[in-house]
Structures are given as C-alpha cells and as structure tokens.
Length: 286
Image 1 (cartoon, rainbow, N blue to C red):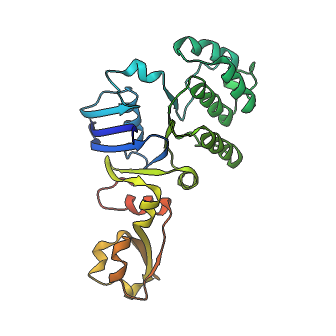
Image 2 (image 1 turned 180 degrees about the vertical axis):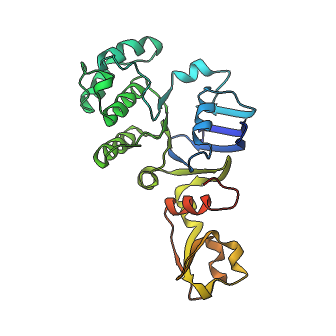
Image 3 (image 1 turned 180 degrees about the horizontal axis):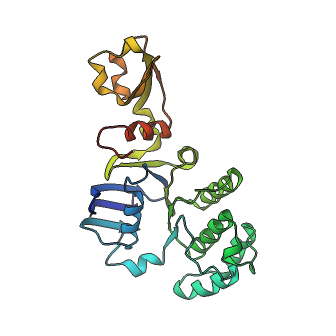
C-alpha cells in the first residue's frame, strides 16, 4: 500500500520546544486525525510539511514526492485549509477563482463553479463578508478544484456551529476515495470518531501513538474506583491518574485489565478521554 504522507525523524528546535524526531505515515485513501493539546507540535508539523519553516532534520514525503526537492510539483496536488483564511478580504468569491487558477495546471473552473453552487457561495460576495463556515467552504472549493490528491486541514471546524461542522465533515466524506487522502488536525475529537480511519497523537513534541483509530481505542481502558481501591502495583500503570474525595479514575493499557481488582470499573475510552489522560502525564504541556 502506498503512503500519501511519510514523515521520518522530523525535528524542529525552538528555544522552549522541540519537535523530537517524529515519524508517522498515512496510507493512501484514508483519513488521519492529527491530535494533541495546544503546543504539542501539530501546527509546527504541518508548517514543516508545507515548507513554511525550516527543519533541523528528518524527511517528508507527500504523494511519493520529497517535499523539498519536489515542492512545486507537490503544490499542484495538495489542497490546504488552515484555520485562518489567506485570501484578500476585498476579493469576491469570483475574484478568488480568477486570481488562483493561473497557478494550477489542473485547475477546473467548471468544477469550482459546481462547488460554489453546492456550498452556496455567492460569487459576487466579498471574502470579508463571508461567515467563518462559508470561508472554510471557499478554501475547500479552491482545494478541490485543482484535482488535489491530498488535503491537509488545520483546525477547519474550529468556531463552526454544529450544522456547519456537519456539512464540512460530509464534504470530506464525499471527497475521499482510494486515490485521495486527508490529514485533519483538530481539537474536536468527536469529529474524528465519526470520520477518521487513522489517528496520530502528538504530545509535547513526541508521537504517543500513530495507527488505526480502532486499535487506539481498543488498546486502552478508562478505570474508576473508590479511594481504597488505588493499590500498588497497578498505581504506576495508570496514565493521567486523577484522585478526588470519592475515588480515582485514569487510563491504563487494556492488557493490564487482568491484574485489576474486581471492584475496579473499566470502560472503553473516547479519543478525547485518551488525549486528556495523556496531557496529565509528567512532562506533558498543560
């Protein structure tokens, strides 16, 4: 199986943060959720993938091409949607299309018009007068109108109301096929539980997990118990241990369940619960 994204030993160093030789890959034809708390390294990774900043080491391949050597060719086949729109505010939707189409060899004006109609984007309305949801749809229309094989989305649903978010997720479902792939960075893990096939969880500049969504959820359990149940030796196995007046809860690897007392309650976790537990580990941000 070919990979749409391959990141190997990627490193970026700042004064107070290091992206620590991370590696992960996304098979072609799937959606990967890219998750982690603020400051974990998601946006830094995406900026490195798009050559928006310099790396200290490592390799990045997008659609089988080196993102440094083949940067111009890659741009023809990668669509990007960031959390902030990058079009001129005074441009109309029509002018956005006119300004961008000369840069793409596979630009399809008929397809852009089709998406504009499908997304209910008024062609004569200015960018500055569009709602946040409509701006996200405009960026998607641009990304989808030049035969992009890979979409890289950084917090596209942030600030959207539930209806707009649901519409955006449906657009992504309709886009994906065996030749097209999506990397979706988001804080809203409920979106990922609905559409993601793979999850990469980054914590404090390190990859905590990268693999299928189902394997992630199957590998961990939320545990709950009374104050007297928190006994050694399994105490040290609990990730993100939280104690209160009535008891405790936390996260453990599913393989540890056989060592737990019968009175300990275990439940399948959500992605959000895993992310919160990871964030409470010593050495994590937050």
